[in-house]
Length: 249
Image 1 (spheres, helix red, strand yellow):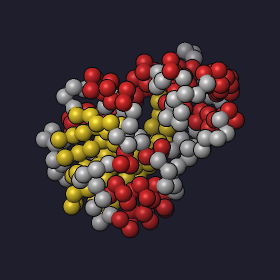
Image 2 (cartoon, helix red, strand yellow):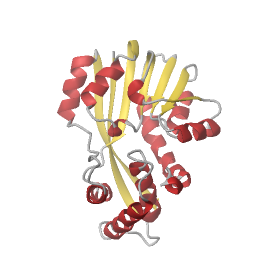
Image 3 (cartoon, one colour):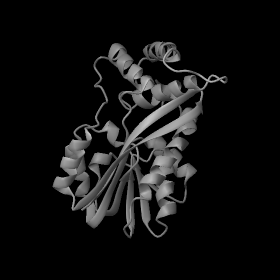
Image 4 (tube, helix red, strand yellow):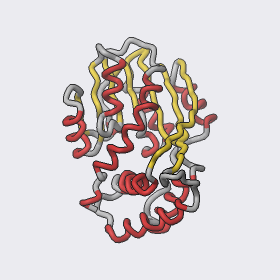
């Protein structure tokens, strides 16, 4: 899948849309931040948000994909970026921030406990991630992944709200939890689906057979066309539900 590896142009088309949730989450952090780490930083949009909100802080963006890190450094040379797995984080920080990565991580209870240990005293873990179950585009896509790639796990890693409350009560001195719907309009569904296929499948296996990926993409486009009402420009209105929490050590 070399020529489809993260399809950088399409990723950049939609990555900008992730800035609003990152800004909303960063504004809920009300401590003095001197050191911050942005886990699953992608092209660095959320890292840049932290750099702008916490002017005096030393901010580091972390992503496991070396090509993404290279391009993040290119796009935001004023920020610091490191290639690493987010669950192998070392050191302690005033702020451990993640805008859209925890959905890729199984066992959220263990992940939250581990990340809380990377905080300084009174530091904050600030997390947001999409919970897309129930939105037709994503439901159809996950169904097709199981059809074409049955060996890969379903990526519904989000827990129920009561479970997050239980976990946070056990490991944080205080916390806030909330959920929000974001609506995105004016998107060409074919471009969005091309991006989604790359973003979802590449982390599983960069060497997937392109014929199989293309067959999945073609069926996805056919089925999604019947699941949404398109406007006069052929665009759709997409809802993405997001889970957020901030937790103080």
